Length: 338
Image (cartoon, rainbow, N blue to C red; front, top):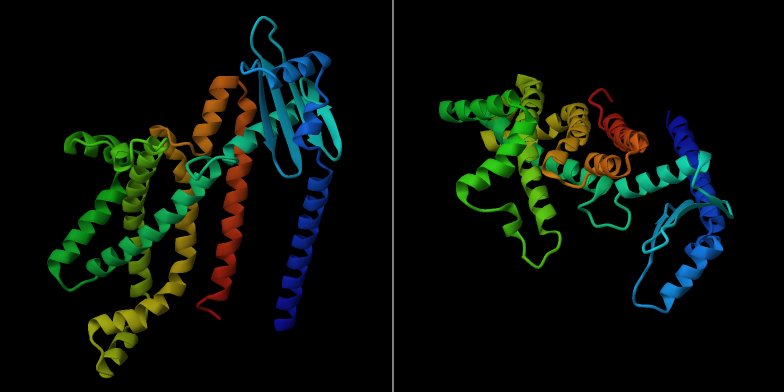
């Protein structure tokens, strides 16, 4: 069994090594920014050269570097309006103003923007992953407290925990997001952006992210509470009796015996919760947070290209598959049946 596991890991390492090697080779062969721009038309070259010696810029250059492939878009302003697009790949520069290369260039540009390349954590896929990860972490912490409250012998704690879980599982996440982002500041007389310095250019986005994280964590806590509760109650009652016989109190029994055993049983359900939150994170478009969905919608509106939703789907699928593989590995390692 161990030799089979070692062989699988070796195969995975070899495959990963080959992929990395291919990416390195393609990255080395990829034409750089200067080389791509040097292939522009003579008219565009003249305007670029003129801009180099002038404070007034007439050429707007957008360059997207995706490690193994690059995309450059140039547009001019003034009396003579021009636009040119190029794709750099495998040592060559291809015009991307029409045909298949136009579609390839669009896909590179859309993917680059949705991944949040060249931007901080408040943009694209980075925001989606960060929001999901923090939501599940806070959701598990809150859920553990709620689960212990729901199975507590204290009637008040039981009812309060039950009411919380009922409320957040019984109302839509989108409405909860609206309440946290719009209603709470409206009642309390503050704005989420005020939590950050006025000089911070990202204050609006950071405020929106904070509100989204609170709403998502409160919602996730209700679902995680049921995950934790079911895992705790699945532990054989003999474990409680044995702990009591050893002189352990309730807190010691839960922290040292029950919860450590319950963690293994939670893993499959927590992984499902993570994937669900990952996809539900697209709801933040409603408060204009720059996640994958918001960026793809903005691109579609500004450029009128419905192709933008193809890379959006692929990015979500890749992220989901990546975390799915990680959770599957964790589940196999800590399986209760091993």
